[in-house]
Length: 299
Image (cartoon, rainbow, N blue to C red):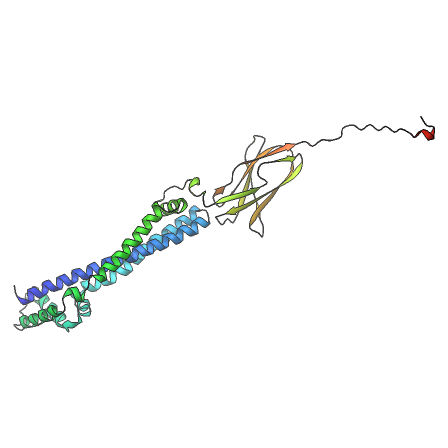
């Protein structure tokens, strides 16, 4: 095998290592972006009860971020290696060759095109081999440059898988819902979100005004609704008013019959409560008897 052929094999191996480096760096970047974006997205959506419109928007942004990161990290380096057989990139990464790579690659291209090759080419290839022996690829393109990004990619992927499998229920279900569209059962988020409703189940006087208040915990809700059903009738829904302290209020005026009710806000529903009417004792007849003192002489 000629010195030129041996050096061509050397350059082929250098390109292979550089392509692998580009691949693992791309994988690391994509994995880190996917992991960070997923955590941030799930945290935001959890705080707002996973409204479907926002889920779709975050899913599009997440996919765009992952694809954009992959293309931004992969394409430039890959194109540099394809241009002129990667001469410029090889010269940059193997500076000790001092222009020999560019010259020899040009010679190889002319040789493949059937053009005559200078007899001095073999001497230049031998000189390039000598330089390569003094700085082998294991030194010029150390494995550490590939192992560190590979380890980072593995760590980010592991964290992403852990988030979707062994994280707290609401986080795991949220990540799977964001990436795979898995349906979110109400109980999956119950641990992180709750509604405190007052007065809850209570006994109230007939025709009394009942003020219902609700406070949402674990989720930011811009609105809340009160659902009421009177004496086995149909459910009626009314918007509650927000207060300055983050609660929601609504008053049921002059309650004339028993009712069942619950509150919904931010994708969360409270327990169902019952208002039972009681009739307070009242005076229906009054008899007045007056006994005059004996000294008055009155009967």
